[in-house]
Length: 147
Image 1 (cartoon, rainbow, N blue to C red):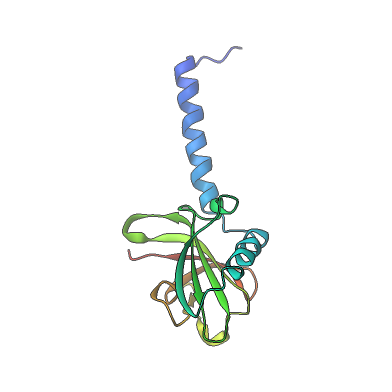
Image 2 (image 1 turned 180 degrees about the horizontal axis):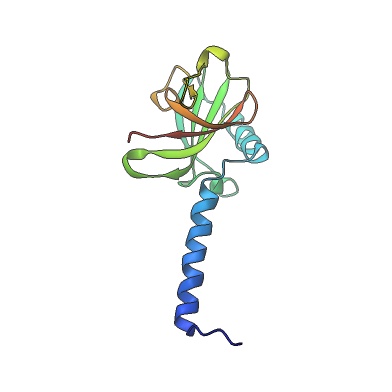
């Protein structure tokens, strides 16, 4: 039996499906390999201690929705990356936190009945990251939600 939908309706259906798949892919945290590639690039920037916003090169730009990475370099030299995979209303986001050294246990606040929070001192963007999934001691799927 031939498809009863008109070509215009079929086209609209594929457009909607494409948008849904694109939106869902933004929610997938950056992979370990993707994070490692961004970290290698960041390490080559020789950034001083503190917080930095950097535009990613074209080859790494798909790692975040806006093609940027937030970097926190601690006084001990540890680098942490925040890749925002989906940015929403009021700067809420879903993303990935990745560090080149373990996130310390005192930087992870476990909450009964709620998600853990990663809080790394030195930059407000790293101080209230809700953990969606933990992928080891350096790699977290995180989100920020002002409500």
